[in-house]
Image (tube, rainbow, N blue to C red; front, side, top):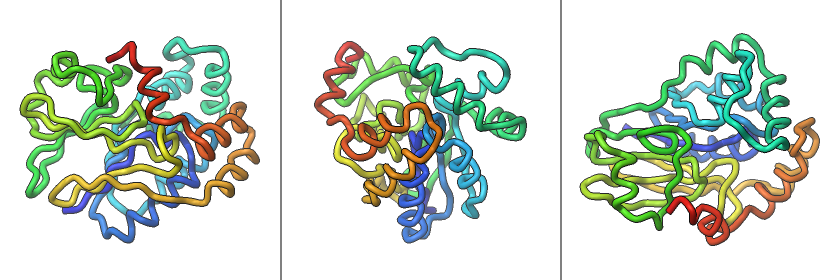
Length: 246
């Protein structure tokens, strides 16, 4: 069985379209979406695209998806800066009751059993919650409690938008990176489980993607196009930002 694993799309539909072309070329049997399909600049188009896929898929929610769901239910979600509140409000306004019902079916974690690998545990950030942060530099003794109780030999997580592959005790922890908002070289990052772990990066037409994003009504469209597509933050920059979580 070959499974494509996609995390942190953040409604960047051009990046997702490019990844799916590579996914189809890899002849996968199934998809796992690891959270934070939302929010982002093309939420309506991205959800419609994902729902129309003809490859079996399973979904877990990330903090972004959860916060949009809470807004669709009339709540406010997690505390965020005002600029992000506007973005979240705009994302929720693009969606409707049917989207709310679908998002509510996504689970918080998932375990699949794959030939040649065994059990694989999927979460968005850590096994404890969907917002906790660690990086490839976080000491093992801080990471281990984040995955306490996980019996699988392999855990897959996202949230930090940076590729990582490390072993903590007997547990291998892999972050495939972000499809839509990478921290590192431009491109769309994902993973193939095909008897082993294969980290993948898909190039796509960045200038055209930026043009499409700027043509939306997304309140942060210009910043997203410039800083998340054309010239994303480097891994070194984001490791420094997250240093307080290490």
